[in-house]
Image: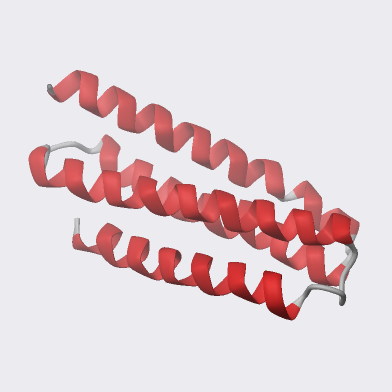
Length: 123
């Protein structure tokens, strides 16, 4: 469970730092559309940060769950794939990178489903 608190702390720190960088460092350097793409990556990363903490807290209560660690790792993968691909797309304009983004979205969705199933199963 500690790993998900640590990953959540790192992801949250990076979301704030990347959001500030986008607002102050990228403004005027990339198009408004790409700045919006960057902001979407930051927003989803911050929501996923919350997911990582949720997984950590539920693991404190449901230590025997095999679903929760999967949910945490899928959430972390979602950050890398979804938000990461949007960051790269924003600053490079390489369009095919956007094809990776839905994989991260699916990882987020499956993570939420696993959290829900674990909670229903164990409470």
